[in-house]
Length: 66
Image (tube, rainbow, N blue to C red; front, side, top):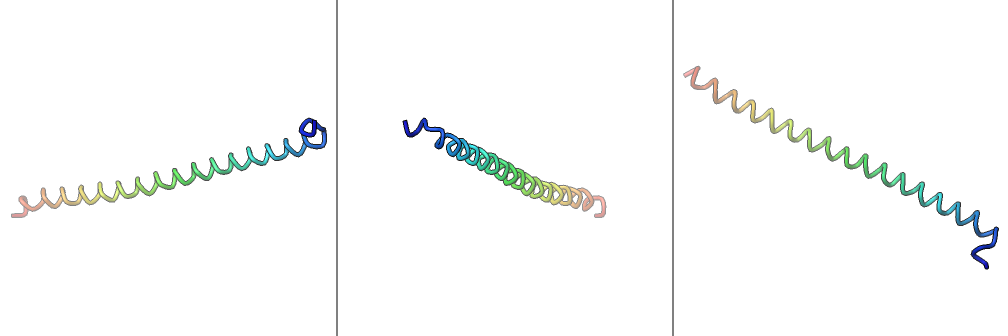
């Protein structure tokens, strides 16, 4: 009967709300972290792409200049 007493229910509901709120914050932080990783990986891929394009440009221009 102690768990069903009215004095325990608001406290339990408050704790549940805090746990759920913390879970949402954790999910948002996780999403931001994942988006940050995607952004960094995207930048790295762009750098590699530009390096590859630069090398292709150098390879094409060398025979014409020679």
